[in-house]
Image (cartoon, rainbow, N blue to C red; front, top):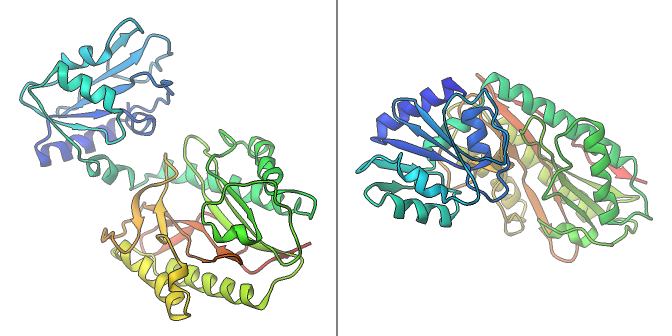
Length: 358
C-alpha cells in the first residue's frame, strides 16, 4: 500500500466527516495500493476506512500483489461480491463512492447495506492525485520523452502514399520500440480538412500538397500517460494556415509562460483564448485549453474558464489551444507542463515552430 497517500486521504476524510471511501477504478486502486490490475468487468474494490485500515476485494482468478497490505477478500464467479462488501460498510456511516463505479455494483451494495449514506465526492481523491510526487514526475517525464521519440520518427515516414490510418498504425511498433506499456488509444491522425475536426477518427485519406497534418497521441509508461499534439504541413503551407499557426503558437507560448503557483486554471485558459479571440478566431477555438494528466489521460484539473482552482507545485497538465476552420483544416499545439516552485517545465521537447515536410 502507498501508506503516505492513504494517510493523506484519511486526513481529508476526517476533515469532511467521511467514514469510508470505496475506490474502484483501476487508476485509483493503483494509486493507493501500488498494484495494477484489470478486473475485466468484474468487481475490484478497495475500502479505505478513516483509521487507515483497508479491505481489498478481488476475484480469485487474479494474482494479488503481496505488497498490498490490506485485509484480503477473495470472491469467485458464483458469488455476489457486493454482498460481501456490504458486511464491511459502517451502518449509518458516510461512504464516498468512486465516481466511475458501475451502477450494477453500487446498486447491489446499497441493497446489501441500505443503512449508510452513499455520496459522490470526487475531489476527495482528485485533490490528492492532481499533485504529483517526485516518483510520479519522474515517470511522467520518461513517458513524455518516449512520446517525443515516437512522434519524431513518425515525421520521418510522412509521404503522399501513406494514409491517415496507415500512419496511425506505425505507433504500435514505435511505442513498443521505445518502451511504452501500450501503443496508445484515442490517438488522432488527420490530414487536410479533417484537421478541422478536433477529434477526427483516422481513415484512408491520403495527402495532397498544402495539407495540414495533425498528430495527437500518447501512451502509458509505468501506468502514467503522455499526451502531445503537433501540426505540420505537407510540401507547402497557405498564407491563411500559416497565419493561424502563428496565432495558435503565440497563444500556446503565452499561456504556458504564465504558469506558476497561485495562478487560477481559468487564467491560463483566458490568456490563450484572448489571443485567439483578438485575432478574430475566437469562435473557432472550441474546447478548453488543457487538462490534467497522470494515471488517466484526462484528469483534474481542467484548464478552462470554469475552473478557478489555483495552480500548485506538482500539478501536470496540457496546454493545447487550437483553431479549426471547417472545410479547410486546423492547428493545435500541445505540450505537457509540470508546475514548479516559481513557474513550470515542459515535459515535451519537440520543436513547436512551423514545420513543412516533404
